[in-house]
Image 1 (cartoon, rainbow, N blue to C red):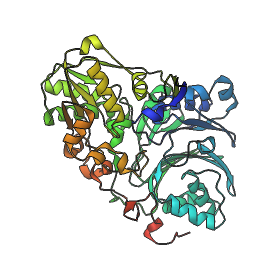
Image 2 (image 1 turned 45 degrees about the horizontal axis):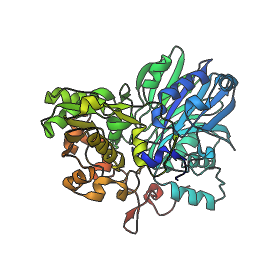
Image 3 (image 1 turned 180 degrees about the vertical axis):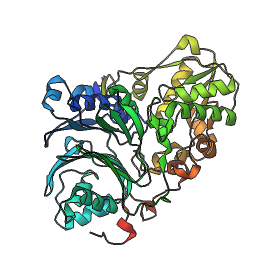
Amino acid sequence: MKKSGILESKVFNDEPKEYCGLFGIYGHRQASWLTYLGLYALQHRGQEACGIVSNNKGILTLHKEMGLVSDVFNEAILNKLKGNAAVGHVRYSTTGSSVLKNAQPLLIDYAKGTICIAHNGNLINSLSLRQFLEKNGSIFQTTTDSELIVHLMAKEKSRGLEESLLYALKRIKGAYSLVIMDNDNLIGVRDPSGFRPLSLARLGNSWCLASESCAFDLVGAKFIRDLEPGEIIFINNKGIRSVKQKGTASKTRHSFCTFEHVYFARPDSVIFGETVHSVRRRLGEQLAKEHPVRADFVVPVPDSGFSAALGYSDESGIPLEMGIIRNHYVGRTFIQPAQDSRDLGVKVKFNLLRDVLKGKSIVVVDDSIVRGTTSKIRVRNLRQAGVKEVHLRISCPPHRFPCFYGIDFHRSNELIANKYGSLDKIRQYLEVDSLGYLSLDGMLNCLKYPKESYCAACWSGEYPILAEKKHGKFSLEMRCCGQGEIEL
């Protein structure tokens, strides 16, 4: 007899995960409560851990735990986080293990005072920096790359916050959006390439920063604009001030993460100047043009596949039908009767409308296939429900290359398109009647800015910031400043 067990969602869930979500507010007497709401809206960006740091007349107080926002915070905890400024973070680990000490925001006492930092992205020269700093006496409290920034700030000789921050930013490479708070200031930072989003909003006399504009909607703030790539915003009792990172030229290539539009961001958010739902709808329309098929229904994979499926339906003339229903109350773990029952992991998350699907030919529209395990099980369940034909359409190109900028697929051999190579072999593995991915040009043509403004490295293999190669394989390490030694 097989024992019951608790199955982590990572075991069966091969959907891609992103680093985290950020929220910050300055100048509001209910700062921690509004940060809590902001994190609620950003929960989709990270479900492993969350935290809030409040600022009460220069005294910073932290509460963070593993788990969802609704589990970690309650009224009593929020009432203890007093003050008119706060920073919040939801996390999914891509650098550093999934333990409480790595949860953010990081709150650190150092030579220049007390500071907290929340980070979205991934530094690609973190290994070189960490090794150098440790050799020169730095003692790290976590295994995250985010802590490097504070150690670099401490190395700068002056006591000025702005000078210390600029010093650190000059020496880090990769993808980073940051929300930082010290005793007096709330600071927003976006890397010169603009990989990850970060936006500014106004709430009465208060200012807000967030990874996505949907967080502003929930707290009632008015979206102002995205931070520009390479921009630093300082907010304090004197108002708001914007500066550019030193050495950031206007000709620096922007590298907006296209996968934010395809998958990560909520459809009601404005990302990189466009409403995500509208972009995904255009992706679906283009997908229908590139891969038409005769079928009875277009069936979206909820939730992120819905907008693209709507576009596919409009362009193709095939009616949209809700054949797959998602259970939104699945936590990170659940108890199952048999540990080797992989199908149960998908079934607990998705259920099928058998009366609708039986005997039909359907077009299943999904946003992406990364590893392929979940898609294969889903197709098998559709066959068991009596579906006659399954035509799978994906609203982005095949993922063939690892991401070094904050998404959790670092190895090519994890990716189904890299593993199986040809479209027909992928189709055979997934056991679908036909398979169509959106072309790279087709995807980029659906976006607002010129093609060269976007990072599409996970599809094309063309990395906007190159990682160092070791033994013929990419490493997350890159030599700082392009030199063999770290310049401190």
